[in-house]
Length: 293
Figure (cartoon, rainbow, N blue to C red):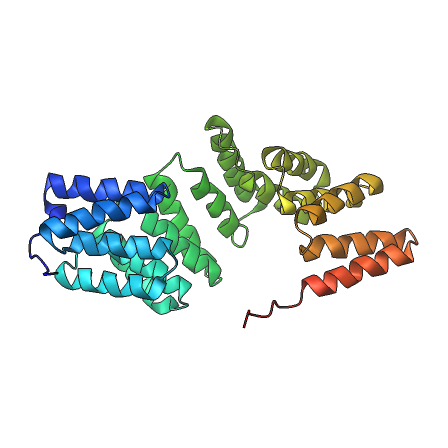
């Protein structure tokens, strides 16, 4: 269909249409979103907005290359679309085009400096590349732009672990936990991250209640049970440690760390057969998965 020169995003009706379809996609109602999009295309033809929405649908369907193509078509018509640059960056990350991703995220930040989401993704990209100072800066911006976002403080704590004093890191995680409790988020992440940080500092008594809270919030938290098992073993509560680690392997039989810890405990107890079994499972769980033919 023909590409129209007018931009829906410049009108209230265009903004409403785009926002409505985005909400449908984010809610997982992809078929409804496609119907709305087809109606718009049949009525008024392609525009930067419809191309963006097509790209977002393709992204949700894990068709990252075609999503990228749609975004490039839309940006050729309207360069100053921060959401399009952000989505282009997210595609690039999945496609392992990290330089492209960083460039697009920086463009998105420039176009929408008060939107915390591009800063969040840029911080995550820096963190994944061990650029902790840059990651900390981005996450600090996130917490300023959206002070109520628990995840912002949780990620800031992760970055600060590599840079700041234990007191600073703990205070950041505690703030994330406060937000999680106030907002009833049922998200174990800040509890688990603080528990693991305290474990690394040999502060087992402080770490254990946090690990317990993590598994209370998420009964399927493989990492939560494993962390709890590690702490219980350090504190001499061997039977409870075994029970927690077994729960971790029950939830995810391929979780290597829990098998390794169980093997170590069984060796200490002189249970050679159980120890060798867990060590075998540990080694098998670490093997790369062969792609399907």
